[in-house]
Image (cartoon, rainbow, N blue to C red; front, top):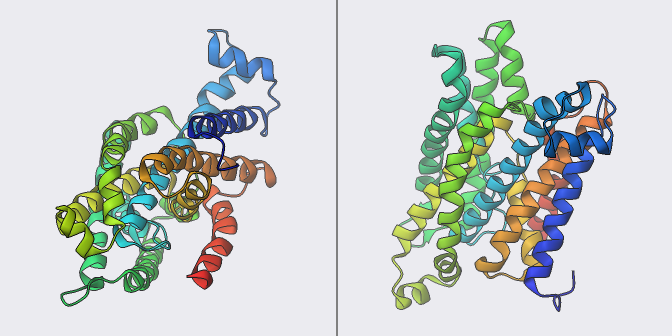
Length: 332
């Protein structure tokens, strides 16, 4: 998109792309669905086998993908701003892995009623992600130089690998019927594709995404050097801590319904910045749409690429995101 195009036009075009991809994702799949049935499913009370497939299977799955992609995009943008590191992403630096270990322990060892399971998952994921984030922050911080961005990425990757090992140990000790759940989580499958899981994460998004947009100007300031930010009157450590908590909560609520999906939080902010520039007031709203679109696209392509089970969205996102991560690593 040309930089001469006004921001509202860019936003509307991105929204239209997201809506178009959603319609395509509702049409294509194992069952043949017509465009007319999509319209009836969304805008009428009619019922048929095709309409039932849309309302009960495809629509909640794709809405979950959009919500999760948007949350991961905002979380990644915040982490990149907090650390001043373009490589920061909740999946790459171990935040998602911490949430995953907490969810696996909860699922395997803590009995809970079926009706409450979906609503407790985001809370459990937040606890695991928060503990992981605190440990990564502590090991990356130096009293003499403050938070070291490159060290944060390296420490985060180390934590991610270690926590992946913990997940393997948990799988080896799990009952066979429970292994599938953890395997789906590790692959980044959009497994929480039911309305209760969407209802469970919506409050987190309704609170945290507006809060992030409200803090956009603070994140602009944090992008400057520490002396400049202090001179303006910003309490750097306090702002970083608050924003880190919000980023961790967004990532945790997201992966509680889709599993370990990386690179969306890395790519979406970069694409948005390339379109509208580095001001958080502009690129954050666009990153929300782009993040949702990226994960929706990954899930749609993966679901239709290999029959009958498809390729998990997390693997599709990694196939795109890993080369991009290497490109950024070499560039920076």
